[in-house]
Amino acid sequence: MEKLKKFAGMTLNFIVVVCGFMLLVFNVRANSLISEQLIKVPMNNNPSVLMSKVNISNNSPLQSELDGDYWLANMEARIEKWLKNSSLRKNILALVHFEANAHGLDPLLVLSVITVESHFDTKAKSSYGAQGLMQIMPFWLKEFAVKNGSLFDYRINIRLGCAILKHYLDREKGDLFRALARYNGSLGQSKYALKVFNTYQQLKLTDNS
Image 1 (cartoon, one colour):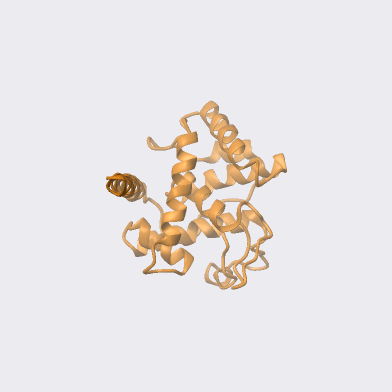
Image 2 (cartoon, rainbow, N blue to C red):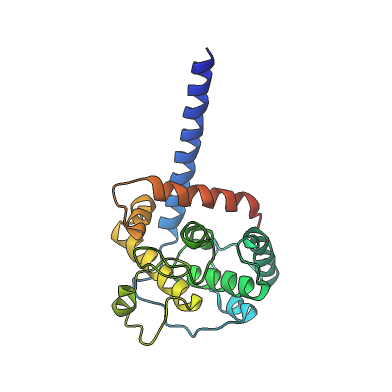
């Protein structure tokens, strides 16, 4: 009987995860608005300036400047344990929200990828050569014709990371599970996508905006 209860509990948890993942995929498909190429907007370190440039849609959590400040404060508290520099936290969060919206992505999804990939370490480098916040391979600089740019520059890293993720989403016709696997170079495996999704769920539970 005890084994049966344990099995039933595991089955229920799996169903909850799958249903939640399907909801996220649906939202991504509904908000897929931008082409594969990089958005041509100027780099800017000022969070308030970036927030003023965000193209607000009906599905965006930032419906006003006040809501934007709330989102930043809420998310800032979530990543403080990884990123102690307050100014850098604000800049990264503002950039994430700006670039995610510009590329038709969910900002929480981008934050989840960053959390899994680097835990907000702007200088992170993998044994395979992936660099920066979103762990991007250097060849992408050439693909997007970025000259004299460094992937350790978080502004370039976030912009390219969003563009790459959008590229894979378009390639997979909105299939987030496969797009995340492609982003990680693990197509055909589920571990990475589920890890990102679980992180997304944790962030979502704390985002009441």
